[in-house]
Length: 631
Image (tube, rainbow, N blue to C red):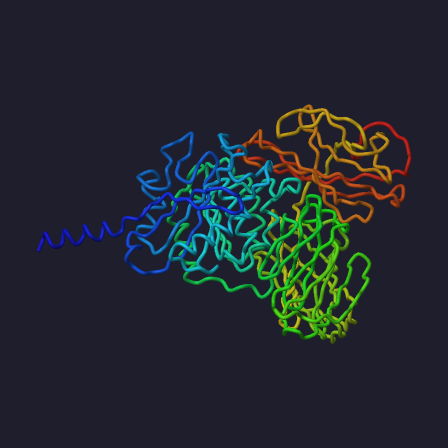
């Protein structure tokens, strides 16, 4: 009997041993043979089962079949590193397949190219996001997978963690859950010549209908940027979780994160009824829709609040408030949501000036409608009835929304439908804790078709360090979202420089002192109407250029620059600064109030400092001398 029991347990142990195979396939995207490693359950050959798939993206200096180059004892594939908490160990005890793709991307046949995935900077036309759907199709065709988005996930480490979130956010219609082990929050991405700054902090809208998880470490060199990202996603993304471990850069407790994916496979989120998407590529598919453009410059196509009732669209240089690119042409094909060969009434509102056009369009045989727009901001409504959408908001009585203080907003409500709306009640809600909404119910007047009405939102955020607050305007059971940037109470800057064409010694790349000329003006050190300026705050024997925020009508803040800190902290992220334009029509003597934010190097725990800035506007062409100091 003892022998029989021993043989039984040995057979169970043997059956649990996963199959770890290194394979290849021919890629049409890359035009070459590509490698991958696949982890199959031990009983794969005999079970007849189909399995969900986790696609794993390795980090810098790794390969699909090789551990970290400078630390070969950090093997998370198999073996006893990480206390045996490895991919193979997990697959050996779970009904799941893991596919580890190869991020190796040499520019020449014999090049030893350690940076994977062709990101930051973009150096070739070989695009891994374009390759991902091809790899998925190949795996689904050659292995017993459950071939739907509900049973497909991405995960990865470091650069691979960034890629996991980026690829999942680009293809949410292919992915139901995504995790990220200590990945950078920012890189340059996109096709060559179109590469754009892609920062996860601002891309939370790409994950509608998806569960997401970020793993951080107490001793990780990227943790400052993780906390900045969490400070946004925690309050804007449902189904987002984060876990911090006492660990440095790596894959601690890998099974915890893979268990997160197994739970998502067991209870997948449905396709979202309303979705958002931001894409760096000029042409892309998303949720059954197709978008094409003639964009010849870096930028981001932004689709918001997309549903069968319509959408909001724009093309921007950066997010959230970058300059729109109206010279870009967009061609958008909807999903097959409409009765085939039946007419639909389409209303298009150009938000820049409220110009309206309306036409009847017949859905094609597949139930799709087609729209031709430019890169400006548009609200598009589909249907014969009233269709409400939230437009821009304005902070009243203050230049920004402050934590700990009552905030009053004027919010525009558009009717992008073809019929007037009735008098109704709008109810404000928030999913965020420590936020009080005063008078949450508001009467919304009748809004003519193609017109708008303004309403108010009064609230207080009691968290002194909240960076963003999210609200929903609920009208006739429709939830219309709005996200409000928040700022802490900050001291007034007693000394600062206005750079309007003058050279200063400033910090760049975190710690390097560099002579640079900022702005475009007469160099008198004052803000003259018609000038582009920078605000420089003193730091030791040099200055730091500030990122600026205000709702002042005299200031155009659509130009934001990035100071890449990669050579300093090796993360791939950057510090931001603004180059505001003082509008030509701004009257002399007008007082500008701004919130200034600078990032101070203290790797790995950088610091953010806020201060308020005040200065008068001089007349266009005025000439003065001296630096600007607050009185």
